[in-house]
Length: 99
Image 1 (spheres, helix red, strand yellow):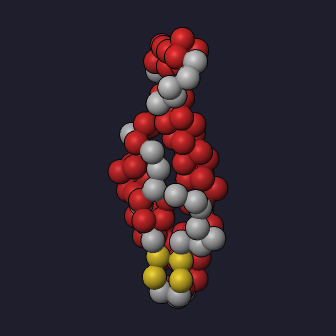
Image 2 (tube, helix red, strand yellow; image 1 turned 90 degrees about the horizontal axis):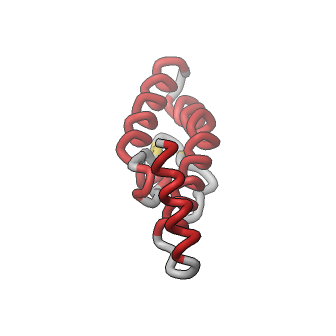
C-alpha cells in the first residue's frame, strides 16, 4: 500500500498494518505493531494532550517503519521474481547465508 501522509487525525491514530502494511517476507508485521503500541504509550505519557502525543508517535515511528516497508517490498520482489530465476535464486541463497 502507498505510504499515508499521516497516521494520525485528531485523537485517532493508526497502528500496525493499518498504518503501514507490508509484505510478509521479513516477518516484521507483528513486531512493528508492538513497537507502534509502545511508541503510543511513550508519547501519551510524555505529552500534555492526546492530539500532540499522537503527532509525536507519528513523528517517532514513521521514518524507521518506512525503511522497513521498503526492505520488505524489495525482499518480496526478489523472492517472487519469475524472470532471471538463477539470479533470483543466487540472491535469496546469499541472503539466507547472511542470516
